[in-house]
Length: 363
Image (cartoon, rainbow, N blue to C red; front, top):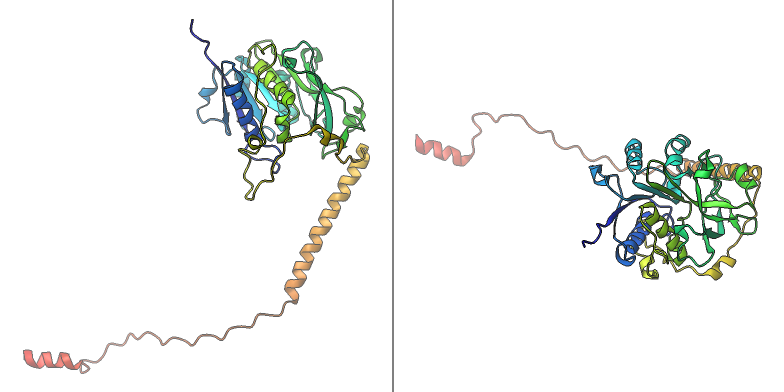
C-alpha cells in the first residue's frame, strides 16, 4: 500500500516586523514549518513564502494557507483569488496582526472564511497575561494539559459573523484589571466594558461548502513559540485547518532551544538583542500600568501627541536659530583667471628653425 501523499501547507510570512523579537513573522513561520516537516510525523509538506507567488497556480490543491503578517498586505489584490481557494476547500488560518483587515473585507471575506476578525473602533489590542483554555473535546485541545499561561498582545472583542453559533471558541481567556499589563493604541468602550468577561482568542469555523478557517490573536512576542502548549495549540489548529486528523496527544514537536529562537530574525542593521526562553516566574514580575477608561486613554493619547509635536517644533526652531546665528563662513579668494585660450594662427614668417632647415634643404 502506497503512503498517502503529503498535504501541502503554505505559510505567508510578512517581511517587516516591529523590532527585534516582535512580529518575527518569517522566523516564527520557519519554526512552525520545521515542527510540521521534521518532528510531527505527519504526512505534510510545509513551506514558507514571503510574497504572493507570480504563478499562483501553485496554490491550487493546497491543504492550508497560514498568514502571519502585518495586516493583509500579502493578500494584496488577490482577495477574489483567495476566496475562490477557500470555496474550493483550502483551509485558511490567520495569526496575530493578520486577523486585522479593514471593516469591509472583514465582513465580506474574513467572517465567511474564519468566523470573525479584528475590527478597528470595536476590537482592542492590549498586552496582558492570559490563561488560555482550549475548547474541550475539540481536536485543537489534544495533548494540552491545562490552561496555557502567556504574556502577549492578545487582541480581543473580535467582530464575529452574525450567526455566532457557527463560530467555534477554540481558545478563550478572561482579561481583567489584575492581569492587564498595559493597554495599547486601540482601546475602545466595548473592550473596556468586556473586562472580566471570557474572550475568544482563537476561533474557527467549518465552512458549509467545505474547508475550515481559524484566527488566533497571539503571536506578537516571538519567544512565546518556545512555550510548548502555546506552540502545540497553534500546530493542532494548523493541522485541523488542513483537514487532517490531529493525533490523540496533539501534534508532536521538540522543545525549542534558545539558539533556534534566535535564528532567522529580521535584520535591522544592528545586532539583535538575545531573545531568552520564557519563564513563568517572569509573568509575576511584569510592571502593570493602571487600566484607563476610553476617555482617559484618548486624553492621554492626545497629550502624548501634543507633547511629541511640541518637542519636534522646539527641535526645529533650535536648528533654525543655530543656523541663523552661525558666523558666515570665510569666503576663499577667487582663483586667478586662466589665460584665455589663443585662437591666433602664427604668421607665415614664424616657422620653427628645424622646419626652415628642412625647407632650405628641399629647395
